[in-house]
Length: 122
Image (cartoon, rainbow, N blue to C red; front, side, top):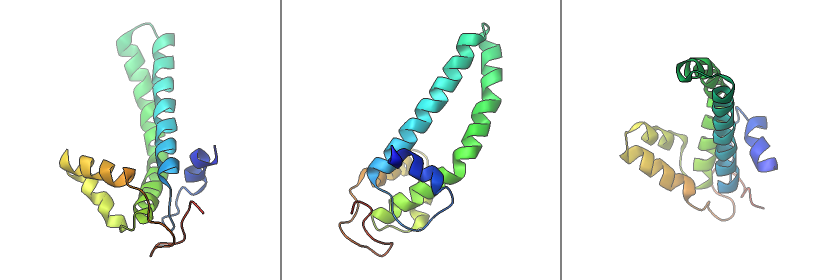
């Protein structure tokens, strides 16, 4: 469970490395949290339009709250594959950039120390 909490504890740390497990677990838990939140609001609010207008501000606040930790863990993940922080900008390119970003995030990290620090798996 530490790999889910660690990105929140290191919410503004852009140095070092993060493992694939930490990165993907964190994003999965975040996605599930947002899905449960939105569906819970839909259960308690009968009208679909009212449920959407009620959940939108809450989802927006959560997305803003998670923006910095998401950026930091993504940069640390790039560091784990020995790529610089600015590779995250490739995700701004529609479709091709997103696919490239996902491919980078699923790559195995470099074994042993690299130019961004020690191996986080040790």
